Length: 293
Image (cartoon, rainbow, N blue to C red; front, top):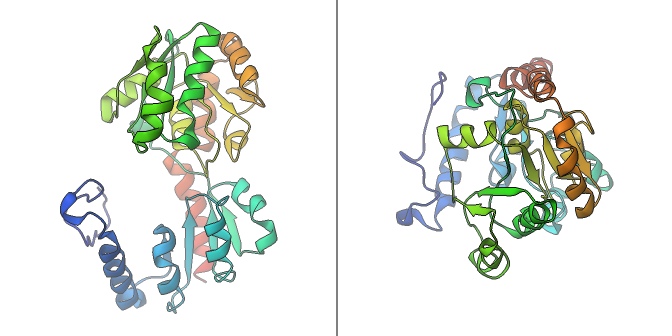
């Protein structure tokens, strides 16, 4: 939904549309052709299309920048981006820039993700449960979240879609038999906002994050975050002020006992100062105005 003029190449979401299974590249190619044909209409082209628009972007005469929301630790990133070292890139975290310093990429600015204030609900009072809210994949380590909650003697509510069924069946499902652990599947809208608002803390043992939206959503809800000191997590969570950035799983367990000392109002204020959609837009506009001169 947008106030801009939306030019869709698909009439509905295709992520789980079996009619288009494995054919999403068709839509990416169509998008690229549309942008190239209409580029003279724009002051600047900002791509969020991951790898699919890298090649076509070299054919642009209009100034452009590619916002990178994905991983940078995989070998495919360095192999591919080594060919696009001159391409202007917008980082979503300083971690992305630091982790790729040897590639000499053209990072032009850093702009953390932002969330609309209306998309989160604040509560000054903590709930009784810890929350895991992420995809169920090995990199997000939901099994570690369960182990942390059990060791801390806390209830854990788990929400998120299963993207790796083998991992879920062999590593996660056996742990769901323990009392105090509840897996409720994928959540959206009001249910998601309520879960975040009423949680005691978000437990986020993820290993690789470009810029975690769920951390930002938690802070906007007033919910402290307990995370591992990996990738960009420490850029988003202020140690001892909006949560705890742990070096080990044991430190995450210890943080569960300390999380009551975190002010939920401070979490909300940190969100409003740094991570709202309006703040993100202002940072983008500042760059666009300079690049389009």
